[in-house]
Image (cartoon, rainbow, N blue to C red; front, side, top):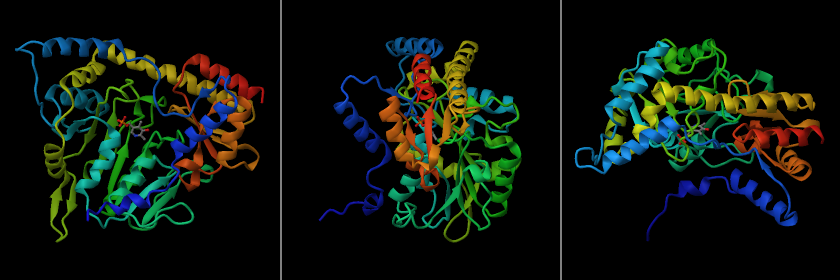
Length: 408
Ligand SMILES: *Cc1c(COP(=O)(O)O)cnc(C)c1O
């Protein structure tokens, strides 16, 4: 008899977004004429920049000629894209990252879960709480955790709470851990990590022979000049960190699909028998075997992000969403709601009023303002009592939503 991967059965049932959909559908069928505003989804809404579209159109035409046709490309990505990334995202910020250390992919969601392929089964793993659910669920699926406990936490996983009490800063653990997931600017809280905080994490990782998986999907939204955009701005990080980056949120590539992972060649791990081995080679082997690269057309589109035109178009997109975020943040505060984030990230993290739990606040907003947001508790136990609103929407919808909240 065929056996399945039982680890999948450990995943918490009634996962966040299906439950949101269920409640929204029920509400809409009871109120068929309702004008619902969705501020819950972490997906962009503005069209693709013309620089990227033009580059992709030209690439399609090239593909229609014998001279310009491209079949399988390098599994690691085309050298011209890796060079552009190395120059613009790293060298210009003073980071020592070479094109060879950049692996182009079709998404950070897959990279941040696929990375477990090259890591052993016995690592002590930590995530922040609340957290981007992919980090937790991919570990559950890979059998790197135990069962879910009554609290909603998984056995064998360490949770680092980020909340009001610690100013949404991930505190350095007292115990020794091997693998730490950090995402800054943070989804869902919109919090950022200062240079000194990241330096403390790098210091911790070096002392404990640990690996930091740094998700910088929202780096383009950083407004403060002294907040690092990359973990590789921190000295020593080449010995202890992998970084995930994506074109999804800055250039609106959520449906186009292009991202990259940076693995310094100086990054080492240990084999079962204690030998030191570099992670770059393992990931290169993994990608060469299991991945066949991102389409030529899409990589040309991503390359165009680094053209003068592309840079200014991406800046306009980011500014547009950040104006939304600013509007949401200031209007919520005016309405008397305690709110965080939204200053260097496209998410605003609301403390639910009157001690309501996250789902009660969800129902209240849905019922009284016809606004859909995301309950903080869906991102982890420490997210209970919070609520996420996303700045990814039209200005009209954001303004309308804020007016409704002001009138509540
Ligand atoms: C949106 C997002 C990403 C990007 O994922 P892609 O697969 O590249 O679209 C990565 N990490 C976080 C935390 C995100 O919210």
